[in-house]
Image (cartoon, rainbow, N blue to C red; front, side, top):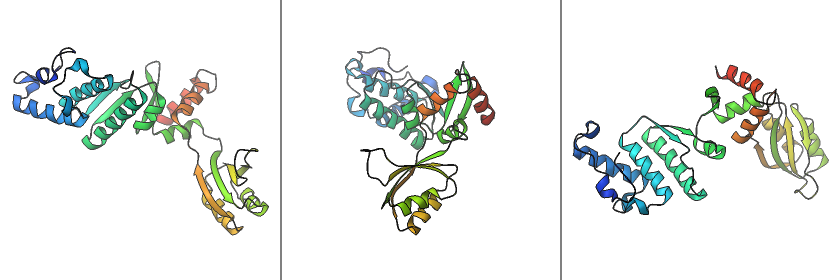
Amino acid sequence: PFIRRPGQMFIRTRRFPRGRNGLPREEAERRIEVALEQVGLTAVADRKVATYSRGMRQRLGLADVLLKQPRVAILDEPTLGLDPEGAQEFLVLIRRLSREGGMTVLLSSHLLNQVQAVCDRVGIFVAGRMIACGRIDELAAQVFAGEPLQVEMEVEPASESVLSAIRQTPGVREVQPPAPGEGPAGRLRLLLDRDVRGEVVRRVVGAGGTVLHLQLRSHNLDEIYRRYFRGGDGDGTAAAAGLARAAR
């Protein structure tokens, strides 16, 4: 490794012996400069590593990975111990390097909000075995299959004719008004058997109303995870079977 121990000058310990990893010194030096620039450490390259913050050391470790120019990088709990701001900056860096450098990043983490923020696809592991893999919306569709779609909507005016037009739309299971004190009367929650948002909008307009807001509520990874482990028998076995079949 190009860092032997904290406290040494990084400018001295970042050198490869000639021919290290099959690289001549000139190429190794070029890669070092590029890696430092990519992780934002060029300005502090001559400082002692012992003076680096935890976030800077995480970036330094990532620079070490980038030196090898891998097609796949495996990062295990990369934001562990970082403050929220440092964790967010590191996740943005990972995503940028993956997109711009064409590198696949396998991220292992128990912090599901971070996984959702940075990952394109998610795998769920149980006892060392991956039982499902896909985009978050795909996993949500599998886990919450058969449940109504939830739509947040705001209309104006919230007249009986407008509300009746929404209720009578085929595919609308339920129209829930806001509870007292939770907002204007036109702020609604719809439960749909299928995605009929377009037809709902047409009927609202036809009844003389205006749609101010319309958003399909999506399930986040934390909800998927909790539902998965509540599935069927309480330990996730039934849900695992369903997800495994869907993932094949």
